[in-house]
Amino acid sequence: MFKDRNDAGNQLATLLAKYKDDEVIVLAIPRGGLPIGASVATFLNAPLDVVLTKKIGHPNNKEYAIGAVSLESIILSNSNILDNYYIERETERIRRTLKERHKQYYKNRSPKKLQNKTVIIVDDGIATGNTLMATIALVHKQKPSKIIIAIPVAPPSAINKISNLEHVEEVICILQPDNFRAVGQFYKNFEEVTDRKAIQILDYFNSKKVSEM
Image 1 (tube, helix red, strand yellow):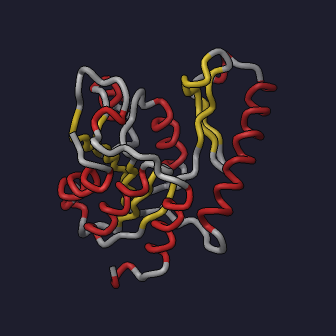
Image 2 (tube, rainbow, N blue to C red):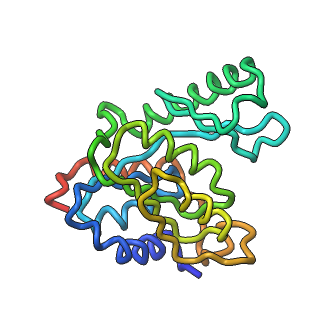
């Protein structure tokens, strides 16, 4: 059980100490991943950025991810089962949302370049791992040298799925409970991370040079 996201992030950070000498970029999945990412990035003296992707839900079950969309790319786990019209319509809708979030989070700056970097993707927890799998595929397209996944809590089935991906160097997960029902059950304080709070965290990191943190 974690006190809150900061506590979870601090515990993860110590497990990532071996990457201190790498050229690291910490990528947080908004919004819940940002407090986690802030703790990890501070500990590693690394830049913090967000990975702006959103899952494409199955037409018969929106919670089941069949792919993911970023502003530049789309990844589908099995495009044969769906018609192109549904994919195009969902991609368009999701990208409208991502563009709004991009304006909020990035303002006048550009996303950090991931090529040849050790990229550590963090979130406050995962349930099925399907959305994260698609996100990893999108990040891999940017040619990082390593992709590390750092998660406070997830069910064993999700961790096995992520660990078996060829693009993933290592998966670090503190809690892997068999009785997993929801991420929030493993936090004493799991209050929502608002867009305002997420933007404050990003602005703080981007207003300082990494060497000054």
